[in-house]
Length: 76
Image (cartoon, rainbow, N blue to C red):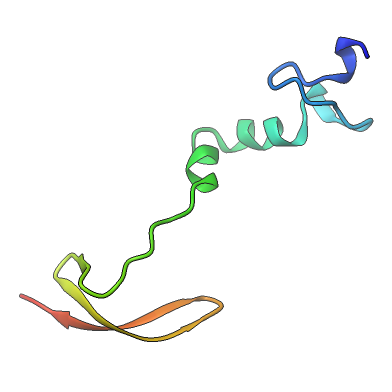
């Protein structure tokens, strides 16, 4: 294969319709800037005993597709 069929940044094989001669992954990273690396990481999940500002998570009350619900104690 020639270099024309490879992404110049990562070396991946390019799809036939690759715009700007970059692979989809490199195009996404270029479009997102430094945020691409942050979004690829798994976010930390807080749990009981965790303090978020003046709130202390006491107990998990429920969970669903959009998030977790905790019983909290507000400290002033």
